Length: 227
Length: 187
Image 1 (cartoon, rainbow over the protein chains, first blue to last red):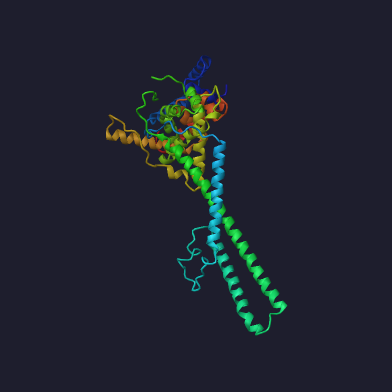
Image 2 (spheres, rainbow over the protein chains, first blue to last red):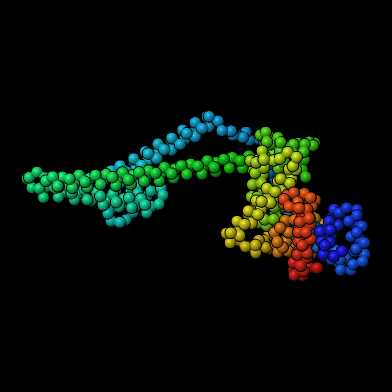
């Protein structure tokens, strides 16, 4: 038999997990083959070296899972609670968006400095660049409306405004409202998604924390057999 | 003294008995920690993996198949978590070298002189480094066999491979370790 074919049998012999027939065959071979005997001795030494470090790992901190809340099962009540929570989050998003975009709160700092009273400048929500873009758009539209309003009496003097002027103004105001609504919708969507994501992450963290908290010290449990 | 088997305890966990999980933890936390510590050399990682293993036992108790051994199932979970942990470490640029020579908490060796204690620590470090030099699949077998004292058949179940493969990995793992120790001046 080729000595290389003995590899698997060597380790079985080394750990005393071979059959009686295999043992006899191995020992007969070892008595004849110096190379294999040397190989077996070498494996045996390595095994002893490895085994000599078996106790070199410290004992872990003692932990045990004790009775905690029973496993949660989905029920009609839990779905109702989830739905109520989602509705509340949605309502908060709507309220936030309405308050945020009310004409009194959109304050523009013309000097470029950060205005701490400005909810946009101090907002902690989301990508500031997007919010600043919305703010700039609003400022631009606001300026444009102001120019239209201020130019009205000058161009028309004491006469009635022409039909073309009125249409131009109506179109500008209509565009302004559309842009404003779009900006508000985008922002509301962003805020709503952010709150939902945060809420979801928070729930996952809470659930995980509860599980971990269920693992507490209990070394003196007399009913437990320690290995 | 309770003589409830591990498998009976898992069955109790399946029905929501958390006390049984506590008993399983107390029975297995030390062997598990020993095993994980050798697979994941960083102490804090080993603790995380142990914690996560028991959490998975809790969360996936319903997947435990009747007739299986709890220890096999638990080692499978822990082994997969160890592999994930090592992969994550490597992905984030934490190379194995970082873990070498890392101070690990070791048990005090009562009755040993300072010189003998130092020699023993050096040997332990050499073996630890040697284990890191051989392929992971061989290292897993060596640790499960030598340190956890499992039978080749049990290791084959844990690794989901034939018993002959386990023995072959054991052979090449021991040979590789011998070479690694020789490179460190240990014969």
